[in-house]
Amino acid sequence: MERLRTPDSEDGHGGPSPGTPMATAGAWPFVTLRRYHLPGRRVVWRDRQHRKGLEREARALEALPVAFWQTQIYNFYVGLIFAVGSFLFMLGSALSLIPGNAGVPLHIVNAIFFAGSVPFTTAAYMQHLQAANASAFAPDPAAHLPRERPSLIGWHPRSPGWLSTFTQFVGTLAFNVNTYDGLHAPARWYMQDLALWLPDMVGSVLFLVSAYLAFIETSHGYWSWKPRELAWQIVFVNLAGCVAFMVAAVLAYVPRGAEPAWIGAASNANLFAGALCFFIGAALSMRESRLAAPA
Image (tube, rainbow, N blue to C red):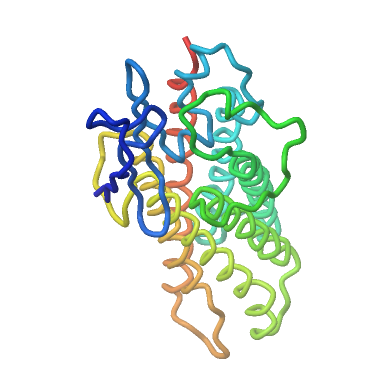
């Protein structure tokens, strides 16, 4: 549900002055939606669509340049690279669920997981680059001209989009460590927990935080139910995937003694479910990029 806040400034005729937000919304302390009143029309700026360049009406009217990180093809490739990483995680977890890994050696399965973590990190950084260079909300299209020198990391702690993409990127780095260590897993149980389980947990927690920040950025509130909106579908299915990854990470803890066989299977099943959710979210984001292409 949107939490609307209406500014007090008016133009002297009982209405808001041009360029003044008529209303804003967002989960405190964030503002993720603003409605502007301009001469002859009203403009709605949404934080997620704004930083990704998915709303081009104003720029198209003014024939203004668009930064390469906000182009249709850039958004498409972000989704495609996420889809590749998700597919590899699905493949690795599916093989792990089959007794004997379907005849595939364990080191090959672990290599598949590591290979899947690389596209995750690549796409996560590409997505963060968008947030790092997102301009502030403004009704004037000229205020959103691309920077001459793009920022590589940025610092926008009041933006849920920046916080979401940054925590996601750091989370992918943790999964890089987790999957790389899996190529040469130590024998002792406590070393497995330090080298494999701990970075897995860190990455899963950061993914979960990132996904919820993306959800409230799109929902303009702490919770919403908008299954007909494509942007909501993307962030919701990604949030579900992060929950599954979190469950998989908790179950992946290696105890000192023996544990029931079903725990490992349940962990891999949740890992597969999470990767499937990410794959669906990536496919939906690719569709979103095509729909956002300017006419």
